[in-house]
Length: 251
Ligand code: FPP
Image (cartoon, rainbow, N blue to C red):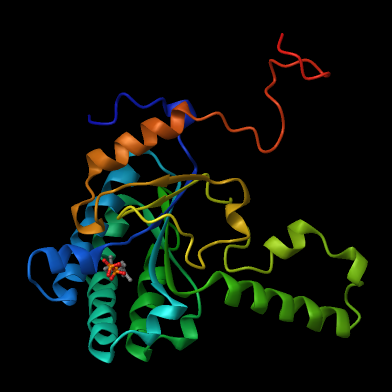
């Protein structure tokens, strides 16, 4: 199988992807932006399949940001249609592959029909243990942190906790990603070096990868190549390597 060159012991548990470049992909072909998103949906299917087959535990895809609501109405409604189609048409496929779906973001802001489709798919895939697929929809990291802070402030006001009792773990537990591992790696396509309001708390020690490929052209092989590079990285989480003595000199 492709991907056999990957070390199964060093696979990331949680991979997050900022899917960027649908518009430019379309523009290059004198197509409209919606056609770029359609092609981008196909790449979503192929990368979800690849991640599952490669043994990734959790895949988060940044599919629609809080800022994306400000795009032209036609583009927003086309994206909503694509999301609805994905949620409905992939239900059986996700179940067959053992993938559990989750939505991260302001679900209540999504059109009612999308919320319904999402609820159905989440319910149907709830018991699946193969991989978790998080779709970040109407997601924004600042909004997520604001919501978490408000929830904690309410608990303080009610006397349930004291301000000095707030810990990092408690903050993590008041985000959409509560009880989830932080992303080990974040991939952004289309050559842009930005987080764009994505997982700013959770990304503290994520390895960052930028692929020049535009999202609709992003393939399983591109994904494997990045995973290979990830396996070569030395993750120290701000500490020094184990092979270094206490005074910092190499052993
Ligand atoms: C960024 O490209 C992409 C998005 C804002 C939307 C991502 C959506 C999809 C990949 C398709 C639908 C998703 C699913 C899960 C079925 P851009 O439009 O900002 O591209 P540009 O920077 O080249 O203009």
